[in-house]
Length: 540
Image 1 (tube, helix red, strand yellow):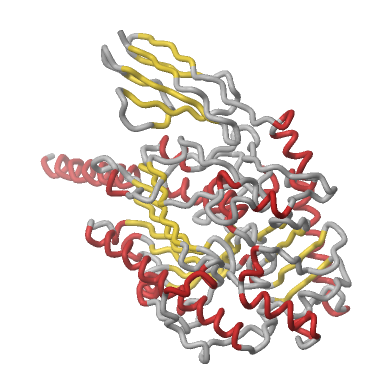
Image 2 (cartoon, helix red, strand yellow; image 1 turned 180 degrees about the vertical axis):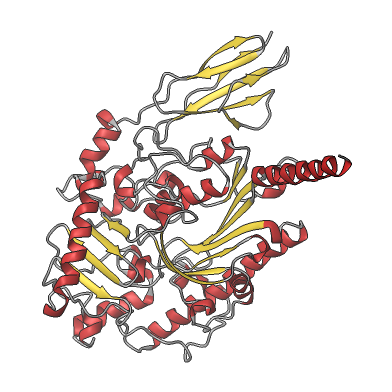
């Protein structure tokens, strides 16, 4: 009898331990950086010396087939934070307004005269998202997570105050409550396109004579210098990555934290950034699992549309049904889709899809060439050289292809045999079966995926901002019952934040228990709307 009781006691401890382990929520860190293709040592390119990234990759899983949903930062980041395709939520035009810009010229629209595909003037705006669409971090905050962003947002809409516990250059997991799980994002800009010409104050640590050039570039001094600067910027990034790793280790968190390392889209140079081919979409992506329980390389196909549901899944939350992605930890996808619409002062509607082996592009409107003379990009010395050499006829056939007139509205590339995407197989008779397959895949995706950006942008803005006026979130109401405050807002699909006695703003997701004399302040926001005024509630 004593033995049976002892066994039951041991079993009860075991089951209690299992339940506790299942309920424990993991810490998650994202280290995101700008404008970079998979040109790291873990992908076979050791040009840049990146010991911290190498160490992280050696202790984690290096994913070989990860693709952004856009070849430029703001639309890509809107997909990451919402878990929605930018075309479906009206955030695919680059960009929407200077009030939410981290980069660029503040007088840009006045100087360039931005217009949509019908020639209508396009005003600055913050995109109004479809109802129910939230920043996915709100679902983490509702699960008890402390969510921080340091510090870039660039979502195509003003970041709602309900998205983060901290959203500034001091945001850090170290400011959380005791034993509170955290989701901490660090955004580094050392590798941004602008740093190709702005990093002249930093030493160029990579010799321009050792870099390998893609075949779509001529071998001239300016190009070599820019490519060497790109690799040098990676070495600067590596030091920032090392700082985060050391902080995690110092806090005793490194072994038990999921660490994601990835770029927000493909490379920073011409014919890379902004393109919806692999050079603009294919990114480095590493996950260091707790205790390094998984290591090696994976060919799993992942889209940025999967990041939001993946993190919610890790946090043991319920994945909202409206999300268009799927958790990379529970499902595998067959295809990754991307889209391009207006880029700064030029409009071009393109959609693409890849399975990791082939990549298919469709131009939705007549275009003179794949190239567009976007002013911001001409600050890159390589871009100026390419333009000059093309005008003089000194580029070879491969190098001229980007500028040359399009002969088809479709492109098909074999990424395995042609990784630099120099041969369009769409008109090759031997690849017609593959072309028809991807044409069908694209047709099905376009049919089932809402696309707000297909319409003229000015018309889309009028739907978002009726009478050219940004909508305003109505004020929060509330009712006390036995010291418990229930908040509400008449504006549909809002998020509500509150603070008690002047403390930090918290996300409202359940009624608030208060003490006599407490002062609760609340305000609401729907993404794209102006935030409501603050309403006060006193428990007298």
